[in-house]
Length: 267
Image (cartoon, rainbow, N blue to C red; front, top):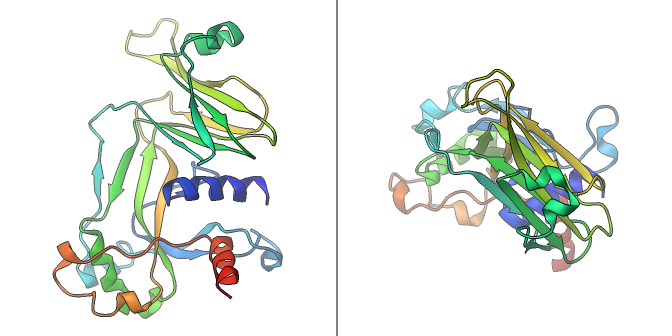
């Protein structure tokens, strides 16, 4: 399993949400398409990949208006709740109040930091600073789209985390722990409210990527989103009525390799 697929797999198992390997690629609530089972680019069918391929958006295509789907609601835009941390199931919280400063001086300056210990295999961490969550409310109204021929057997983005700063980490095999922090250094000659923010870590091992929008508070990154399945199932029958407050949401879209392994185990 390559690094991208492993990272997506570990975060999905922990959160039931799809982690973007490249959070700079915009993702919007209402985007619809499919989860590919092939490699990007030439000869994509040769092996499973499992990334979301957008084919349209229900709001821009007129599908939402046709089916009475309300606009997405963004929550948290005016709040500052700090960093949201998502870790793989094999990660345990690590106390960073003691020895971190002596080992890595950059981390000692961070008021925001967290440490994780991995109990087995590779681990994955996603950190999002002051993220917002956009959702469709009520989520059950998306079941009306099951009658849309264009959307049959597709997946749709029902929830998006948007942030102005993120860090993602996939540990190297055998790595036991990682500490990640967000530092804020005053900009020379700038007003007190402005700072040069950057993510720092305790180890260079593993696959680490981070971005900070230091040009303002704009949330321009999309590190995490939920995909739900528009595949017709027995559970969908009779659940398209107007009482959306009692209608359950569509099921989460499974990653292709997870669906394959479950099918194999049932035979």
